[in-house]
Length: 476
Image 1 (spheres, rainbow, N blue to C red):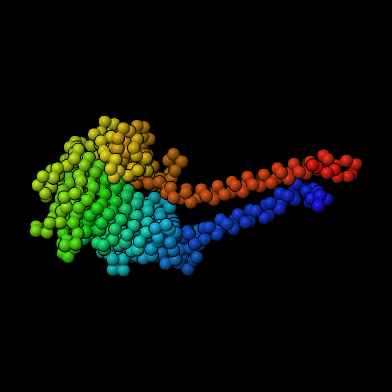
Image 2 (cartoon, rainbow, N blue to C red; image 1 turned 120 degrees about the vertical axis):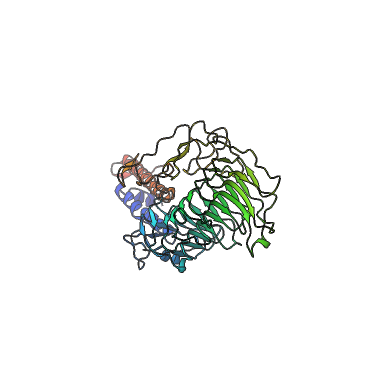
């Protein structure tokens, strides 16, 4: 046995390294491929074709095709580009432990610009039906016939970080919105960190049926959204089966009917629901044409509950007043009636709504219901308390530069030409997270190979050193 071991251990170093390279690295590559297969699909407006397998090198052309192949745990990566389908209708569901996620790999880089909208997508640019889904980072614009940007018809759906704008034809349609939850019996959806503007017919109009965010189900979370210039309704509208929801740290301004409205009504849903146990906190409602925050119920329907909480909201400059409560005796908790002191407020959204030093919104919020990050992805909280509104105040803020040309690199990152509310789009963190495991595995392979080489080299040198007069000497 010792002779056998000696004969094997005296294999040259090059052979040891070659064996390690030839065996271990291909196995690792196969492991990477196996892990990725079936969990990532790709869509590309320029190079895609729906007859492709949907891989990164051979992507699909449409989200609909990717949805038909999606299974629980699938992430659909949509490349930057302009997509002109006549609406998107996705129908597959994930699970609680394996969601299906549609993500624009560059935030707002995948632009959905339908030339027309039909009934196949419920007259919405994107009709999301199913449970445990995510729609993240898209730029969505309406076309003729559009009654909504993203229509949510399911539970546990996340609509985060999208830009939804310029939706609305020449007439006032009943029930058309930037983002809406449908179904009335669905629940636990998340609408977080979206930028929504220019919703509804062009002013002047008498419309009050177009809203930025329209919630009509239960137990939702609506946080860190910026909603402005809704031309035919409220920034955030809670109605029908709205109950048990958290509405926090949003900014609503310059909307034509008001900032935020909480209520319930309209047959046949009012009899089975009560707008109750809703938290409205840390919001900024300024310069709206109407009340900043209000309640409403249709006469005789009694759909407003007694357990709604209005706390730590900042309201200012709204034409009809700060609050209107339908129930006598209801009062806001820790209200702030003051100019929020944005860095550069512009009613049309072209300014910068980050907070100035000394803003009354800084450290004046409540931790109850506050999201863990702000609109920019900064961790809350940074100061002595939670800030009111979608932006956490940073002691030192680097200015967001507007590049002169599309694709110009600013601070090493490609930026879009457009900046709104002081925010310019950036690459999705999901892209970095997807890349990281493969980088780590590659490094582990390199370390393993180096270890094998070192051990082999030491064994080889040891036997060479202990060879005397052409005979092998046993090592103990």
